[in-house]
Length: 146
Image 1 (cartoon, one colour):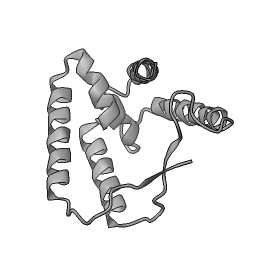
Image 2: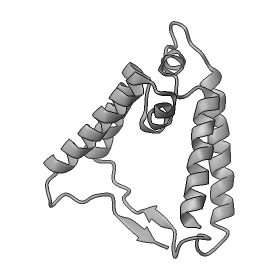
Image 3: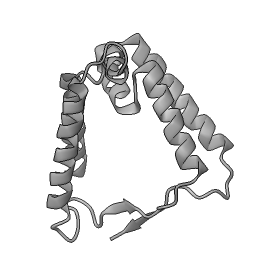
């Protein structure tokens, strides 16, 4: 059942990305181009996502545990460090230059987009390289069960 719920949630997320236009790099770049061909329509998508998330969290945390798991998995790291800031900067620069971020790029694979396949391949290679170069003593994002 947990796999089915995960599949349905992923499918709904992908459909939302498709309908909103977030899988179209040109639309994303136009949203970020405040001085040029600015397209504010993605702001409505972001507002809807924030509202949905807020309602979803409030409903979910009314329960002592998730419906299909033993405990909620929440990050406990609160430090703003070089890794966090550097990762956010690389993410933002890449999103602005290319117009893809991971979720929409994976959803765009379903359209057969060559640029999506290139992006996802490069993303996977970068993830592999980062894990390979990461020092064994550096902590990954710790999680706690509540």
